[in-house]
Length: 602
Image (tube, rainbow, N blue to C red):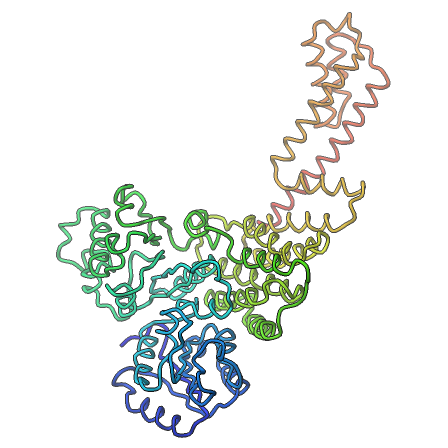
C-alpha cells in the first residue's frame, strides 16, 4: 500500500505495564500484514511527559503521528467530555497538536460528542481491535489537520451557534492539497484532505457523511491508483496513452464530461442525485470553463473553476463560493460582546495552549519556508488566535501578525501563481480584526502599520511588486493616522493620496489647471474691450493656467495673451499665476517620486 504522506508513526501513551505490553505485541504482530507503521511505546503518566515526547518529534514526524492515549487508568467515567482533565489532560493535547491524530482508549464511549468525533477518536476497551482499523485509515491518508472530525472546534466551543459545514480537498500534489485544505479551514469548514484512492472511496461511499463542498483536482494521479484504473473511476481524463476508446472522445470537452460522469458513478456522494446540496470547485492546470456549458456545470454541481496555482486565499472566484462570512472575525466580535463590561485576558488553560502554538509557529517561520511549512505554521497560529478570542491583546496581536505572515508566504511560495494576489482585501481583513482586538484608534493604527510592513517585506522578497506597493501605501496611511490630528498632517494625507496611483496625480493636476483658469476668468483682470467674447477669455485663462502649472512658465501664457488682445495684467493675477507655478513644481516632484518608486521596485 502506497502512503500519501508517509507511514504512520504510532505513539502509545499509557501508564500501565500490562496494557503497554499487550498493545506493543499486537502492533508488532500486524506490522506489514495489515499496514506498515513505526511504533513508539512508552510509559507516560503525565501531560508534561507526553508533551515533551511530542515536542521532540520533527515537523515531518508529527504530521504522520497517531497518538493512542489510554484513558482507562484515570477516574471512572473518563469518557465524558467534562472529565477529560488531569493528569493526562487529553483535551489540551488535542488542541495543542492539531497535526497529530489522537485516539482515546476509554471504558465507555462519551455521549455528548457528535458521531464523527466518537467514530474517529474514541475506542472502548472491550472493542480495542478497532484501533487497528483507525490506524489503517490514517495510513491510507486520513489526516485531522483541518479538524475534519470537529473535535477541536467542539473543545474550543467556537461553533455553538451553528454546525460547521463539511468540505474536502482532493489532490495528489501535497503542496496544493495542504493549501486547498487550509483555505477551506480558513473560511470556516471542517476539511478532509484526500490524497489516495482508498481514502476517497471511504469518504464518498454510499454510507459516508454528505459533503457540503469539494475542492477537487480534475486530473488525479493517486499513489495507489493504476493508470487504466484512473480512467475507469473517472479520476483521470481519458487520453491516447490510457484508453483505447479515444475515438469516442473527439474533443477535450467530451473527455471532461466522461471523466466527471464516471467519477459521480463510482463515488456515490459526488453525484448530485445522492447529494443535491454539494458544491464543487474544480481545479486544473488548464482552463476548462469553455468545455462545459451552464447546464452541464449545474448538473455536476460545479460552483467555480480555477487554474492552478490560483491567486491565494482571496482569489475572487473563491470568495464568491467559500466566504459566507468572516468566521474568525465573528468569533472575535462575539467574544468582545460577551466581555464588553469587563475586559480581561483569556483563561489560563486557553492562554497556555495558545502560547505553545504560537511558539511552535514562530519556529516554523523562515523567509525561505516551503508551502507546506508555511501552511502548517498558519494552521497552528490560527488555532491559537481562535483560542485567545482576542482577549489577551498583546498575544492576540502577535498571533494575528504571524498568521498573515505565514498565509502570505504560503501564497507567494507557489511558483507560477497567476495574476495579482489581492493584498488590499487581506489588509482590510487584518485591519478589521486588529480594531476588534485593540479597540482604540491610535494603537490600532500602530499595530496595523507594524503588521502590514512585515507583509510588505515578504512581498518584496518574492518580487510581488504590486502587492508590495499596496502594503506600502497602507503603512503610510496608518503611520499618518498614528500622529495627532493637526493641521500639519494635511499635507501628509494629501501626499499619500497622490502616491496611491498615477490616475490620482493626473486628476488632481487637471483639477488645479481648470480651477485656476476659472478664477482668472472670474476676477476678469483683462481689458474686456480688447478680449473679445467669453470663449476667447476662457481659452486665454486656460492657456495661462496650463503653462504656469505644467511648464512652470507663466510668461509663455502671458505672451500668448499679448499676441491676441494685449490685455492689462494686474498684480493680483500675476501673483496667482506664480502660486500656480510653484504648485506645479511641487506636483512634478511628487510625480517623479511616484515614477521612481515604481521603477526602483521593478
